[in-house]
Amino acid sequence: MKKLILLLSVVFVTNQTKAQSSILLTNNGTATTLAPNSVIYETTQASSNTKVTIDVKNTSGSTKSYIAKRYDVLLHATNTSTAVAYFCIAGSCYGPPTIVSPDPLVLNSMQSASELQGPYQMLVGDLDEAETVGESHVKYTFQNTNDANDSVQISVKYNATPAGIKKNSVAANILNIIPNPAANNFNLQFTSDVSVSSEIVIQNAVGQVVLSKNYQVNVGKNDVWLDISNLSKGIYFLNLNTGNSTSTKKLVIN
Image 1: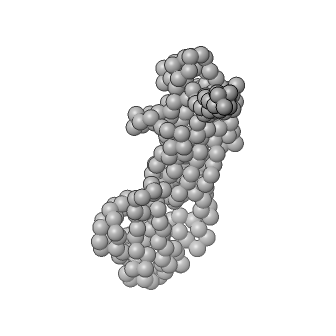
Image 2: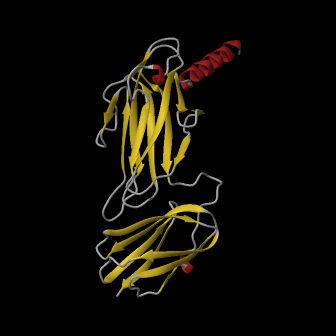
Image 3: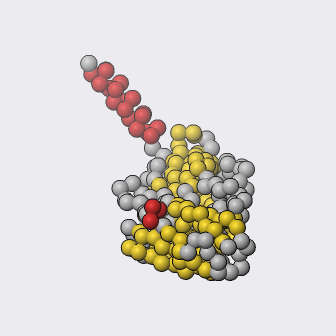
């Protein structure tokens, strides 16, 4: 019986050792430590770049080499454009086709990437948003080049709502365009449950963006006047994007 208990204890300790990682991650933007499988929530602007910077620390007693892997779980796409993810680490930057860093990040015992000389030593995860704002999800794994079990993964979710928090909502069923058909201008009317940044986008019949306007949505009734005097006659589609939802209405210009 004593031998069995001793054997089980050895197995337990061994498994505990394997489960430990030498990697400590910190969100450089908020100075918060990131637990394994943490999620960072970011918001984007249409056709703009959003960066997330992650510091990597070697907490072991010896020098380690680490690589970064990128997984594009979901990239927001429209009929004409798609969000693009890429990253930098260990002093080099890599385009979208590169999903595993070719050159490792070498850290001495208790050293952080932020302590190294030169730019882009920490991981900088970039997302170039599409022509409209939408939800994207990118995962990053940091792994010891000599031990696949020594790794940590985190996620970056763009324009997503954290669990337990009510989504920003704009009531699409009471989104009105007055007048419609319109000529030189019109009034966009809608109500919202929350205050949130939004983007009003008008696309022509083939999906090209012909007008884009940022607007701060207020709780309750909203009225927005839009000048369309420079647009040709025809059929258009108006999209009200809040990041978490999109309301669409047909617009006719005479």
